[in-house]
Structure formats: structure tokens, C-alpha cells
Length: 252
Ligand SMILES: NC(=O)c1ccc[n+]([C@@H]2O[C@H](COP(=O)([O-])OP(=O)(O)OC[C@H]3O[C@@H](n4cnc5c(N)ncnc54)[C@H](O)[C@@H]3O)[C@@H](O)[C@H]2O)c1
Image (cartoon, rainbow, N blue to C red; front, side, top):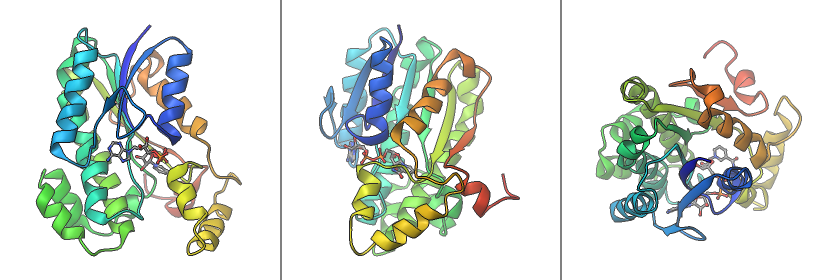
């Protein structure tokens, strides 16, 4: 049985991943702001360090895999989106590298199919440069979608940039890009009268004819963590009912 760690296992997609791993007998160490083995607020550097320390303490033998799933949506204060979605994912993943190397583990980072629509390349560059203050300043007062899609573009590019070197030390890194999935994050918008109609219209354009469920993401994540994906490395897999293909048919 494997030993896995993840962030964002309390609700939504992360809870489904956690439940599926535990159901097949794996150990899963969850770091989250609530309902977790390690309570940590990933919006702060101290919280990220606490998440790494808490996970390492519980997995002295190393890790078979890690899922960076914690995230907040575009209706949260933009700098907080940058802090949790980018720095919360990247700093915790980096902090677990040695533990992952020990067991030749695999990493899956949860990006989004909004990543290719990120409109502010300078913000993405600041994130990738590790300039937290600069990135937060850049999105302060901006539309939340700018902060959100940019954070997801940056984590996807971080995966692409780092996958070769990590692979050379035995760790595969991949990303998944969910589309609209029914979770507390998206339901916050669909149940808000200000956004309900727009969300309904958006959902109606998903080629496959429905929004996704957490299990639609958990299954491919478990595949990417496991031996059947041993040659999959540095990939960004869109899991969105065909939405990205309909938006950008000629770009991949
Ligand atoms: N639901 C969607 O439509 C959708 C689409 C694309 C990508 N995603 C991504 O999927 C991931 C999971 O989101 P979800 O839809 O399951 O939403 P969710 O709100 O159910 O889950 C988010 C998780 O992150 C945790 N979290 C939030 N802030 C935190 C903080 N400061 N510190 C530590 N943990 C924190 C939450 O407690 C929760 O467990 C996110 O990264 C999200 O951006 C979701």
C-alpha cells in the first residue's frame, strides 16, 4: 500500500481523491486549513512550512505521491488567490521533494482549464519568479479571474519547467486542468444570484453536456499517481468535457 500526501483534501475534488486512495488501502496525509491531519493555512509562508513539516513528520519513510489540490476560486481577494493557488502548491511540493525522491514518487498539481485564458503574462512571470510580494501587488484590485487563471497558468508552467529535472531524480510531475466541476468552490458561484445565470449559460456550452463531478478528476489523478502512468511526465491533462477543445481547437 502506498503513502501519499495532499493539500486540499477536506472538500470537493481533494476529498474525493483522498477517499478513493484510502478506500483502496493507501495511507493519505492531508494538509488543509480544516478537517485535516495537518492544519495549515497555505496563504502564508509559515503555513506552507507547517504543512511540509507536518507531512514529513508523518511520513519518515518517504512518499509515493503528492497531490497539490488546495485552491480558492476567483471570488476570493486576488492576492490571496495568488498566495494559495501558486505559492501554496509550489512551496509545499518543493518541500516534499526529497521525501518523494526516496520512493520514486509522483506529483499531480491541480491547475485549471482557465490557465490558457490568463490575460496578464507579467503577473504569471512574477509568480514563476517566486516574487510573492510583486505578484500580489500586481493583482491587487484586479478582477479575480485575472488572479485565478494566472495562478493556474503559473502552476502549469512550473510543472512543465521542473518536470525534466525532477524526472532525472526519479519523480514524475504532471498537472491536470479541470473544467467546471460541481464542488463547494464552483457552487459558491452557481448559487449566487449575481452569477447564477452566467454559470448556467457557461455550463450549457460544455460539449459533453454536463458539468463534471469530483470523481471525474479523481480517477485520472489516481492514474497519474500510479505505475500505469510511468511514462507520463510533464503533461497537462485537460479534464473538462471538451471545453478547452471547443475554445482552442488548434492550440495544444
Ligand atoms: N471546481 C471547479 O470547477 C474547478 C475547476 C478547475 C480547477 N479547480 C481546482 O481544483 C482544486 C480543488 O478545488 P475544489 O473545486 O474541489 O474546491 P473546494 O473548495 O471544495 O476545495 C478546496 C480545498 O482547498 C482547501 N483550502 C482553501 N484555502 C486553503 C488555505 N488557505 N490553506 C489550506 N487549504 C485551503 C479547502 O479547505 C478545500 O479542502 C482547486 O485548486 C481549484 O482551483 C476546481
